[in-house]
Amino acid sequence: MLMDEVKAEKLVALIARSADFYGPGNDKSFITEMVYKNIKKGKASNWFINADKKHSFTFTPDAAKATALLGNTIDAYNQVWHLPTDKNCMTGREFIALYAKEMKASGKVSVMPMWLIKILGLFIPIMKEMPEMMYQYDRDYFFDSSKFEKRFDFKTTTYQDGVKRTVFQTG
Image (cartoon, rainbow, N blue to C red; front, side, top):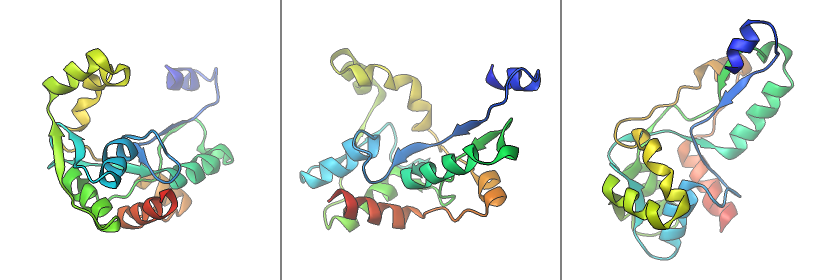
């Protein structure tokens, strides 16, 4: 609807999309809640549906810089942008292994099937909304931000560096 208004020249706007966030200071992200905090407690990390499917994540400091760039670039308006996201997409199991390595812990993974997510939704309000997003976990979910990276000559943080910074800064 927003882009329809832009096309009709009734509005000047842009859309900035991202994959799921991870990064320092991101206390309520899926990765912080289900991976980082569990590893810190000596527990297995949780993952949705299938930990062997690839899944993109956007590093929050990259997203912040990119959003500022977009907002301050006149010719970026009236377009849809994907915020910078490492193109070297990993499986959930591989992403968890990065955290486990940095935290010098086990990379154990506990996968939550859809039926369990639905049951948890009866008792945990945030989980009630999760089934509609599970298409991102039952198949490969790749987020392509090459348009942004080319336009702004942006060096996206790698997953390895992003996880190191997250673990170090979250401590």
